[in-house]
Amino acid sequence: MMEATPQRNRREDKARLDDEIRSCTRCAELNVPGKTQAAPGWGDIDSPVAIVGQSLCDQCMEPQEPFFEGSGSLLNQAFSAADHPKSQMFVTNAVHCHPPGNRKSELHEIVNCAPYLYRELQIVQPRLVIGLGEDAERVLTFFYPTARVLPWPFATPRNVRSKVVPCLFFAKHPSWIKRKHNADLETEYVRSLADAFKWAFSRGSLRTADPATSVPAEKEE
Image 1 (spheres, rainbow, N blue to C red):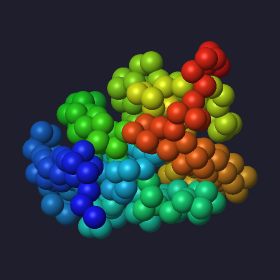
Image 2: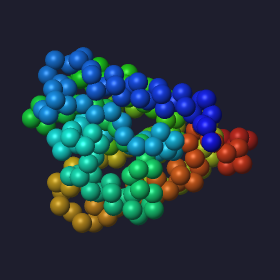
Image 3: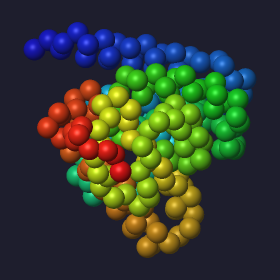
């Protein structure tokens, strides 16, 4: 069966955006093949969850997949615990390139890359955007100044009514968690992310919001 036009256009828009990201020259040191190469957002553009990291890691350049192995192992555990594989998520970064020497992203790099991230999120229209790390939190707060920010650790929110603005959920970057070598901290991290995934999937993306699940007569708490 042929896809409806809006769906087909979204996929075409994403393909064009991917090409722009892969050929970007906005930052002098970045997007050098095999060294600081860019990778666009990866995964399901129909997902109710978008995960935004800091910048592309070294081992993610070749497969063109954010959070590929490395610190992504904690995310993989959370996907498994939620019974929603990574392929059902949309995963991207505040900076789509790998910074030289794995350094922290510069402010101008975050600013230059922000339009790409914003366009990705406009295509996906997730119910929940999860920012991992300070750079992701900063740019997502700028994009969505009126968004409801869900507290850590995750607890099912009451009376979420917006059909336009996603909820935001912020957490430490998984690499920070891994460096602590604390099993209890890792367990809490995985459990909280898994609970957030399950909640978002139970409600669907903003494009497929179910009116039966909204509570328009009550004030958000």
